Image (cartoon, rainbow over all chains, first blue to last red; front, side, top):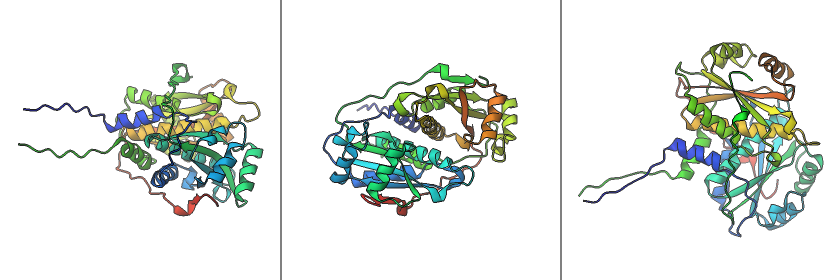
Length: 183
Length: 183
């Protein structure tokens, strides 16, 4: 008789671990990111919630070497593009904002960006979120470079690729930030 | 000889499905949310990325009936608290913002809120994101009610509980929103 021991993590645990394990990855190997994986990542982005379900986002994916090189000098914190093999510009579409509370597009695009980072983690890839909006000289530069329509604002850039180091996530648990039923 | 057929989804698929399956749930049974599950949900929130890793968030969790009742009339879109059994106020801490780009706290709190919604989905619970900030009469009302310190701004409220209906997620894939290497 043969005995097999199978250790099974349940789906809940797997999903929570993916959220806890996500980390900012800034160093990558030269292996390209599979196109199908890029599509899965964008699909995750499009699955984010949005105010009134307006989905005010657009995604510009790049794996072209020239664009990646250009990103290296975008600003002081974009040097990870020296090794990144792909990137995503998450943009807001100003024609899909809500009168009086236009700023909700920022929250919607943030949720889409976080979904993208979690999808990257789940695919054993690595990525990092570069804040672009509301820093005018960052978003204008990107807007000019890609000749974006006037209603499209670059919100964030994600650098991604296959991680070259075995970086670990930080444990950011802090029970002082937790308040039960009152402040 | 006995043969067993085991169908195993890999972790990547499980994680991506959780992101795709998340939906806004507004109707709940009267079963309470387990306290340990609430802690797991908050831990997911605290695992979000933030600008300069400042983690400018605070979480007020409530399951007190009086608070839940009060939330029902918070504004026109908070009626889901008629059946919700718990809620979370995600707050921003203005002492943890970056000079010159204070607004990044909004993006950080949005990422934390999305992590919370994904953790809720993974626990087979349901939840929905109510936009609070920057609508002044919403965030002031909450601030007064909980007597929050001046540096703490209520950013979003999440209503949650055990879903009473078998609601399905929307497929929001739209390839017109996808741009490869150029606009």
